Length: 339
Image (cartoon, rainbow, N blue to C red):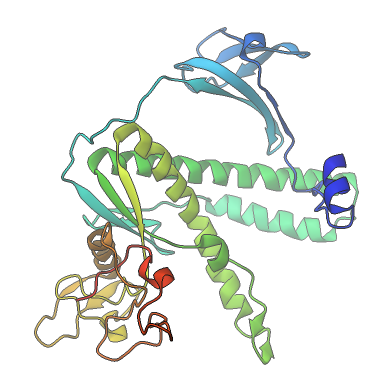
């Protein structure tokens, strides 16, 4: 904090919120850390300056040499996590090298694969949602800095802590199943932080569409798009799977059978019907998008994502001096190949 104030000034430092901060501290010296199992669910750890501390719910064996330990507080409980070296090496080749899959992330279903598998679950129960709503109302009436307000925040954190744990578990299990069966995984290159940013209304009409955008933001964050991406990247290290992020433009409007692109192809959230007179391909909209993502993985395309009959306004920038496409546009991310 002192260095930040000296380098940037006290008025530019972003102070940590006392209400949203979860305290944690790490012990980096493995020579001063000892772990013993006391029973099936109980164990104890010896940490510097703290001595022996008992902990319960030993989830699994450490499986390696301890490198560090981190003590953190979450939802009113203290946790200890160990960083271990399991000596695992990423295999040079996947067990099934000729397999590939595309994953489409959505707000109705968390993840839909090109094989037709739908991965989704509810992370909060009806009773928890009702209780959380009542706690929000109680928080609005509580006086700032009071003991009742602190108790209410702790109760809310317990509910959201369980929801967050379920979401983390779902993403980890889904990622393990996907990378175990596929050597190549295609994902849309989504900027989740920008997509879930707060809306302030349209230009010239403040407040218009804010409620709808708020609902969309909650749906995106509830499905854990970014957490699933991190889980896939982490699990891929143990199987040798390659995770490729492709350009998401027009993946939901392009027919995976003939390549025809039109906004009218997607009739509803779940129905995709190709309007090309010579095709007429019908499929689940998310599965069709996942197949397009699978086809696009590993194929470099131009920054012009429009594959329709008309000329797109998203055309690559042309250099006035040479009349050619700029280097920035030619080095675009992989995406749907042009026909």
